[in-house]
Length: 164
Image (cartoon, rainbow, N blue to C red; front, side):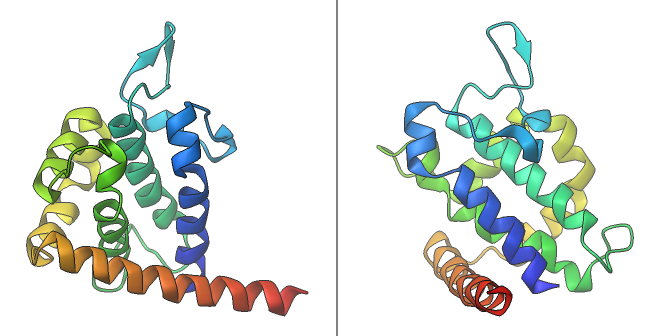
């Protein structure tokens, strides 16, 4: 289960690299994240215009992908861990919204709700429950995400070595 979670997070992080965000290049939409974009660009629906919009779309995409993982019945995962993983990931990306200004966790949720209100509503109860339970400061949230990221890095490396 955690191996699948790590694979999903790895795909998102690859697409959300600072290079992609700063150049405006879009990650290949084979992953389908633009479905969750809040804005239209050049008259087309499903394109994110801002980093906040991209971040919102990727957060919802993460939750949707976690729903498809094995042993997840109606997204009633073990103790809500998938939502926790997504929240940790989201909190680690606050500098991507505006690299010149620190964005607080509360502001991230406000941006998420504004940009992806339709999709956010599907997960609102689970997100709010975990958000309140995980309200112990941005510094510690970032540290926890770093632990998750290191664990995922180890798991991904093991899986790659095993396949070679």
